[in-house]
Every structure is written in C-alpha cells, then in structure tokens.
Image (tube, rainbow, N blue to C red; front, side):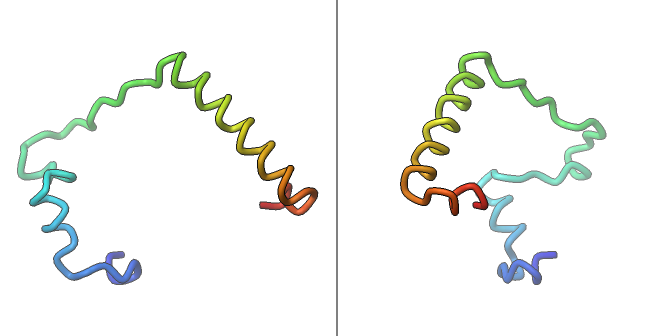
Amino acid sequence: MISGLHAPADALAQLASVGLIADAAASGSSTAPEYLAPSAEAATRYSVLYALMCDAVREHLGLRGYFM
C-alpha cells in the first residue's frame, strides 16, 4: 500500500518516531482505541461551515459547483 502512495520505504518508521502511530501488537493492546464523539458545538460549527462553503462555491461556480 505504501508503494502505491509513493511514500518512502521507511514511512511507517518515520510516523512512529514522531508518535503519530503506534504498533498495537507491540503494545499488547488487543482493543481498538476509544474515540470521542464530536460535541454538539463542533457539529453546529461544521454545519455552519458547510453551508458557508456551499454558498461560496455556488456564488463563484454557479451550476458547475453542484457537480464538485
């Protein structure tokens, strides 16, 4: 998969060295990490941003913007 992304051969080692990923097998953890659900405020902010971006695309691209 990494070669398909044209990433360097040591891409996973680089990500692990800066703490962005961890080897689950090495840590002994067999459970998936817990993810927090977004807050109501974050969901509202996303909805507002989505509407603003749609309006901006529609304003600048017109009908072509719907196909983007």
